[in-house]
Image (cartoon, rainbow, N blue to C red):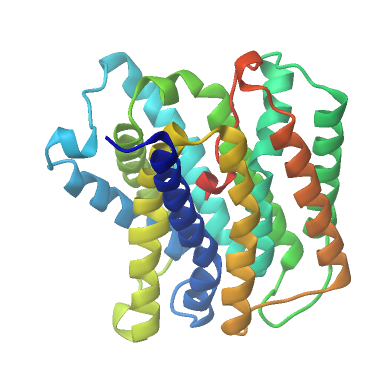
Length: 317
Protein backbone atom coordinates (compact mmCIF):
# COMPACT_ATOMS: atom_id res chain seq x y z
CA UNK A 1 0.00 0.00 0.00
CA UNK A 2 1.65 3.29 -1.03
CA UNK A 3 2.36 5.82 1.70
CA UNK A 4 0.43 9.08 1.97
CA UNK A 5 3.51 10.91 0.76
CA UNK A 6 3.74 8.53 -2.18
CA UNK A 7 0.08 9.12 -3.03
CA UNK A 8 0.67 12.87 -3.05
CA UNK A 9 3.63 12.37 -5.36
CA UNK A 10 1.40 10.50 -7.82
CA UNK A 11 -1.14 13.28 -7.52
CA UNK A 12 1.48 15.92 -8.34
CA UNK A 13 2.73 13.90 -11.31
CA UNK A 14 -0.81 13.53 -12.64
CA UNK A 15 -1.44 17.28 -12.26
CA UNK A 16 1.85 18.09 -13.97
CA UNK A 17 0.96 15.85 -16.91
CA UNK A 18 -2.52 17.39 -17.27
CA UNK A 19 -1.14 20.91 -17.00
CA UNK A 20 1.44 20.29 -19.71
CA UNK A 21 -1.24 18.77 -21.95
CA UNK A 22 -3.48 21.83 -21.59
CA UNK A 23 -0.61 24.30 -21.76
CA UNK A 24 0.57 22.87 -25.06
CA UNK A 25 -2.90 22.85 -26.56
CA UNK A 26 -3.19 26.56 -27.38
CA UNK A 27 0.01 26.85 -29.46
CA UNK A 28 -0.61 23.52 -31.17
CA UNK A 29 -4.21 24.48 -32.01
CA UNK A 30 -2.97 27.86 -33.27
CA UNK A 31 -0.44 26.17 -35.54
CA UNK A 32 -3.18 23.96 -37.01
CA UNK A 33 -5.38 26.99 -37.64
CA UNK A 34 -2.49 28.91 -39.18
CA UNK A 35 -2.31 26.40 -42.04
CA UNK A 36 -5.67 27.72 -43.23
CA UNK A 37 -7.45 24.44 -44.00
CA UNK A 38 -9.50 24.54 -40.79
CA UNK A 39 -11.04 27.56 -39.10
CA UNK A 40 -12.03 27.78 -35.44
CA UNK A 41 -15.53 26.41 -36.01
CA UNK A 42 -14.23 23.41 -37.95
CA UNK A 43 -11.56 22.69 -35.35
CA UNK A 44 -14.13 22.80 -32.55
CA UNK A 45 -16.25 20.29 -34.46
CA UNK A 46 -13.26 17.97 -34.90
CA UNK A 47 -12.32 18.24 -31.23
CA UNK A 48 -15.80 17.61 -29.85
CA UNK A 49 -16.51 14.83 -32.35
CA UNK A 50 -13.15 13.17 -31.71
CA UNK A 51 -13.61 13.41 -27.96
CA UNK A 52 -17.06 11.84 -28.17
CA UNK A 53 -15.71 8.92 -30.20
CA UNK A 54 -12.89 8.28 -27.72
CA UNK A 55 -15.15 8.37 -24.67
CA UNK A 56 -17.68 6.13 -26.41
CA UNK A 57 -15.02 3.59 -27.40
CA UNK A 58 -13.47 3.50 -23.93
CA UNK A 59 -16.89 2.98 -22.38
CA UNK A 60 -16.73 -0.61 -23.66
CA UNK A 61 -13.80 -1.31 -21.35
CA UNK A 62 -14.53 -2.98 -17.98
CA UNK A 63 -16.13 -0.60 -15.51
CA UNK A 64 -13.40 -1.34 -12.95
CA UNK A 65 -11.03 0.44 -15.35
CA UNK A 66 -13.15 3.41 -16.42
CA UNK A 67 -15.23 3.80 -13.25
CA UNK A 68 -18.29 4.23 -15.47
CA UNK A 69 -21.69 3.87 -13.80
CA UNK A 70 -25.31 3.80 -14.93
CA UNK A 71 -27.00 7.21 -15.05
CA UNK A 72 -30.41 7.77 -13.46
CA UNK A 73 -33.01 8.54 -16.09
CA UNK A 74 -33.92 11.84 -14.45
CA UNK A 75 -30.31 13.06 -14.79
CA UNK A 76 -30.02 12.77 -18.57
CA UNK A 77 -31.59 16.17 -19.18
CA UNK A 78 -29.23 17.72 -16.62
CA UNK A 79 -26.31 16.09 -18.43
CA UNK A 80 -27.59 17.53 -21.69
CA UNK A 81 -27.70 21.04 -20.21
CA UNK A 82 -24.23 20.51 -18.76
CA UNK A 83 -22.96 19.50 -22.21
CA UNK A 84 -24.27 22.74 -23.69
CA UNK A 85 -22.46 24.78 -21.05
CA UNK A 86 -19.20 22.86 -20.53
CA UNK A 87 -18.53 21.23 -23.90
CA UNK A 88 -20.37 23.09 -26.67
CA UNK A 89 -20.01 26.58 -25.17
CA UNK A 90 -16.76 26.30 -23.19
CA UNK A 91 -14.74 24.29 -25.67
CA UNK A 92 -16.37 25.86 -28.72
CA UNK A 93 -15.70 29.45 -27.61
CA UNK A 94 -12.17 28.58 -26.50
CA UNK A 95 -11.16 27.03 -29.84
CA UNK A 96 -12.79 29.82 -31.86
CA UNK A 97 -11.05 32.39 -29.64
CA UNK A 98 -7.64 30.87 -30.39
CA UNK A 99 -8.21 31.66 -34.06
CA UNK A 100 -8.24 35.39 -33.36
CA UNK A 101 -5.75 35.88 -30.51
CA UNK A 102 -2.42 34.49 -29.31
CA UNK A 103 -1.76 31.15 -27.57
CA UNK A 104 -0.29 32.98 -24.58
CA UNK A 105 -3.41 35.13 -24.12
CA UNK A 106 -5.73 32.13 -24.30
CA UNK A 107 -3.73 30.16 -21.73
CA UNK A 108 -3.67 33.13 -19.34
CA UNK A 109 -7.44 33.55 -19.70
CA UNK A 110 -7.88 29.90 -18.69
CA UNK A 111 -6.50 30.67 -15.23
CA UNK A 112 -9.53 32.89 -14.52
CA UNK A 113 -11.97 30.04 -13.89
CA UNK A 114 -11.61 30.14 -10.07
CA UNK A 115 -12.25 33.89 -10.06
CA UNK A 116 -15.48 33.60 -12.04
CA UNK A 117 -16.51 30.51 -10.06
CA UNK A 118 -16.09 32.31 -6.75
CA UNK A 119 -18.01 35.34 -8.02
CA UNK A 120 -20.94 33.27 -9.30
CA UNK A 121 -20.99 31.15 -6.13
CA UNK A 122 -21.17 34.30 -4.02
CA UNK A 123 -24.01 35.77 -6.09
CA UNK A 124 -26.19 32.71 -6.61
CA UNK A 125 -25.55 30.29 -3.73
CA UNK A 126 -24.44 32.65 -1.01
CA UNK A 127 -20.80 31.68 -0.57
CA UNK A 128 -19.15 34.20 1.78
CA UNK A 129 -16.87 36.86 0.30
CA UNK A 130 -13.97 38.05 2.44
CA UNK A 131 -12.03 41.25 1.68
CA UNK A 132 -9.15 39.12 0.39
CA UNK A 133 -11.43 37.26 -2.02
CA UNK A 134 -12.99 40.51 -3.23
CA UNK A 135 -9.53 41.93 -3.88
CA UNK A 136 -8.60 38.78 -5.80
CA UNK A 137 -11.75 39.00 -7.94
CA UNK A 138 -11.18 42.70 -8.67
CA UNK A 139 -7.53 42.19 -9.64
CA UNK A 140 -8.30 39.13 -11.76
CA UNK A 141 -11.16 40.78 -13.64
CA UNK A 142 -9.15 43.97 -14.13
CA UNK A 143 -6.29 42.01 -15.66
CA UNK A 144 -8.72 40.07 -17.84
CA UNK A 145 -10.36 43.23 -19.15
CA UNK A 146 -6.99 44.87 -19.83
CA UNK A 147 -5.90 41.85 -21.81
CA UNK A 148 -9.26 41.42 -23.55
CA UNK A 149 -9.29 44.98 -24.82
CA UNK A 150 -5.64 45.03 -25.79
CA UNK A 151 -5.08 46.47 -29.26
CA UNK A 152 -1.58 45.14 -29.82
CA UNK A 153 -1.35 44.01 -33.39
CA UNK A 154 0.46 40.95 -34.58
CA UNK A 155 0.37 38.72 -37.60
CA UNK A 156 -0.76 35.79 -35.46
CA UNK A 157 -3.46 37.79 -33.64
CA UNK A 158 -5.85 39.04 -36.30
CA UNK A 159 -8.37 40.30 -33.73
CA UNK A 160 -6.97 39.94 -30.20
CA UNK A 161 -9.88 41.80 -28.60
CA UNK A 162 -12.47 39.42 -30.05
CA UNK A 163 -10.33 36.34 -29.36
CA UNK A 164 -9.66 37.28 -25.74
CA UNK A 165 -13.32 38.07 -25.10
CA UNK A 166 -14.34 34.69 -26.53
CA UNK A 167 -11.80 32.91 -24.31
CA UNK A 168 -13.04 34.88 -21.30
CA UNK A 169 -16.62 33.86 -22.09
CA UNK A 170 -15.42 30.24 -22.30
CA UNK A 171 -14.12 30.46 -18.72
CA UNK A 172 -17.40 32.02 -17.55
CA UNK A 173 -19.21 29.02 -19.07
CA UNK A 174 -16.90 26.66 -17.17
CA UNK A 175 -17.64 28.55 -13.95
CA UNK A 176 -21.39 28.26 -14.58
CA UNK A 177 -20.89 24.51 -14.90
CA UNK A 178 -18.95 24.24 -11.63
CA UNK A 179 -21.50 26.30 -9.68
CA UNK A 180 -24.85 25.13 -11.06
CA UNK A 181 -24.02 21.49 -11.80
CA UNK A 182 -22.18 20.75 -8.56
CA UNK A 183 -24.65 18.02 -7.52
CA UNK A 184 -24.11 16.26 -10.83
CA UNK A 185 -20.32 16.56 -10.50
CA UNK A 186 -20.41 15.05 -7.01
CA UNK A 187 -22.87 12.29 -7.92
CA UNK A 188 -21.11 10.62 -10.86
CA UNK A 189 -17.52 9.64 -11.72
CA UNK A 190 -15.66 11.93 -14.10
CA UNK A 191 -15.66 9.38 -16.92
CA UNK A 192 -19.45 8.97 -16.82
CA UNK A 193 -20.06 12.72 -16.85
CA UNK A 194 -17.57 13.47 -19.62
CA UNK A 195 -18.77 10.54 -21.75
CA UNK A 196 -22.38 11.69 -21.76
CA UNK A 197 -21.56 15.38 -22.10
CA UNK A 198 -19.38 14.73 -25.15
CA UNK A 199 -22.01 12.44 -26.68
CA UNK A 200 -24.81 14.99 -26.18
CA UNK A 201 -22.60 17.79 -27.46
CA UNK A 202 -21.60 15.81 -30.54
CA UNK A 203 -25.26 15.12 -31.32
CA UNK A 204 -26.27 18.78 -31.00
CA UNK A 205 -23.25 21.03 -31.59
CA UNK A 206 -21.78 19.27 -34.62
CA UNK A 207 -24.98 19.19 -36.78
CA UNK A 208 -25.72 22.83 -35.98
CA UNK A 209 -22.21 24.21 -36.53
CA UNK A 210 -21.63 22.07 -39.64
CA UNK A 211 -24.20 24.20 -41.46
CA UNK A 212 -21.82 27.17 -41.20
CA UNK A 213 -18.55 25.55 -42.27
CA UNK A 214 -17.48 24.25 -45.68
CA UNK A 215 -16.50 20.59 -46.09
CA UNK A 216 -13.09 19.94 -44.56
CA UNK A 217 -10.43 19.24 -47.18
CA UNK A 218 -8.66 16.49 -45.28
CA UNK A 219 -6.21 15.75 -48.09
CA UNK A 220 -4.86 19.31 -47.90
CA UNK A 221 -3.83 18.97 -44.27
CA UNK A 222 -0.10 18.84 -43.68
CA UNK A 223 1.36 16.01 -41.62
CA UNK A 224 2.11 18.41 -38.78
CA UNK A 225 -1.54 19.52 -38.70
CA UNK A 226 -2.79 15.93 -38.64
CA UNK A 227 -0.46 15.21 -35.73
CA UNK A 228 -1.67 18.39 -34.06
CA UNK A 229 -5.30 17.31 -34.39
CA UNK A 230 -4.46 13.88 -32.97
CA UNK A 231 -2.74 15.55 -30.01
CA UNK A 232 -5.70 17.89 -29.34
CA UNK A 233 -8.24 15.06 -29.37
CA UNK A 234 -6.24 12.49 -27.41
CA UNK A 235 -4.41 14.49 -24.73
CA UNK A 236 -6.10 17.76 -23.61
CA UNK A 237 -9.57 16.63 -24.68
CA UNK A 238 -9.57 13.04 -23.39
CA UNK A 239 -6.70 12.02 -21.12
CA UNK A 240 -6.42 15.26 -19.15
CA UNK A 241 -10.08 15.08 -18.09
CA UNK A 242 -9.47 11.59 -16.70
CA UNK A 243 -6.29 12.54 -14.86
CA UNK A 244 -7.66 15.57 -12.99
CA UNK A 245 -10.20 13.65 -10.82
CA UNK A 246 -7.39 11.32 -9.73
CA UNK A 247 -5.32 14.31 -8.56
CA UNK A 248 -8.32 15.86 -6.79
CA UNK A 249 -8.57 12.78 -4.59
CA UNK A 250 -4.93 13.05 -3.50
CA UNK A 251 -4.26 16.79 -3.34
CA UNK A 252 -5.94 19.75 -1.65
CA UNK A 253 -7.86 22.16 -3.92
CA UNK A 254 -5.46 24.97 -3.03
CA UNK A 255 -2.50 22.83 -4.11
CA UNK A 256 -4.20 21.91 -7.38
CA UNK A 257 -4.97 25.57 -8.08
CA UNK A 258 -1.28 26.48 -8.03
CA UNK A 259 -0.78 24.48 -11.21
CA UNK A 260 -2.83 27.16 -12.98
CA UNK A 261 0.30 29.29 -13.14
CA UNK A 262 2.25 26.60 -14.97
CA UNK A 263 -0.16 26.34 -17.89
CA UNK A 264 0.67 29.79 -19.36
CA UNK A 265 4.37 29.08 -18.82
CA UNK A 266 4.13 25.90 -20.89
CA UNK A 267 2.11 27.72 -23.54
CA UNK A 268 4.57 30.63 -23.65
CA UNK A 269 7.63 28.41 -23.98
CA UNK A 270 6.11 26.28 -26.73
CA UNK A 271 4.64 29.31 -28.53
CA UNK A 272 8.03 31.02 -28.48
CA UNK A 273 9.71 27.94 -29.95
CA UNK A 274 7.02 27.78 -32.65
CA UNK A 275 7.24 31.52 -33.37
CA UNK A 276 3.69 32.15 -32.14
CA UNK A 277 4.41 34.23 -29.04
CA UNK A 278 3.41 37.87 -28.66
CA UNK A 279 4.57 39.95 -25.70
CA UNK A 280 4.03 43.58 -24.75
CA UNK A 281 4.10 45.57 -21.53
CA UNK A 282 0.32 45.80 -21.30
CA UNK A 283 0.00 42.02 -21.64
CA UNK A 284 2.71 41.43 -19.06
CA UNK A 285 0.97 43.81 -16.62
CA UNK A 286 -2.46 42.24 -17.30
CA UNK A 287 -1.02 38.74 -16.79
CA UNK A 288 0.51 39.80 -13.46
CA UNK A 289 -2.85 41.14 -12.26
CA UNK A 290 -4.61 37.93 -13.28
CA UNK A 291 -2.03 35.74 -11.55
CA UNK A 292 -2.22 37.81 -8.37
CA UNK A 293 -6.02 37.74 -8.42
CA UNK A 294 -6.15 33.95 -8.90
CA UNK A 295 -3.55 33.52 -6.15
CA UNK A 296 -5.60 35.55 -3.66
CA UNK A 297 -8.84 33.76 -4.58
CA UNK A 298 -7.29 30.29 -4.41
CA UNK A 299 -5.47 30.68 -1.14
CA UNK A 300 -8.29 32.47 0.65
CA UNK A 301 -10.56 29.45 0.24
CA UNK A 302 -11.56 27.43 3.31
CA UNK A 303 -12.93 24.16 1.90
CA UNK A 304 -14.53 23.03 5.18
CA UNK A 305 -16.51 26.24 5.44
CA UNK A 306 -17.37 26.73 1.78
CA UNK A 307 -20.43 25.21 0.10
CA UNK A 308 -18.46 24.89 -3.13
CA UNK A 309 -14.86 24.00 -3.83
CA UNK A 310 -13.09 25.65 -6.70
CA UNK A 311 -12.18 23.16 -9.36
CA UNK A 312 -8.84 23.14 -11.05
CA UNK A 313 -8.77 26.07 -13.48
CA UNK A 314 -6.98 24.01 -16.09
CA UNK A 315 -9.97 21.71 -16.44
CA UNK A 316 -11.97 24.35 -18.22
CA UNK A 317 -10.52 24.20 -21.68
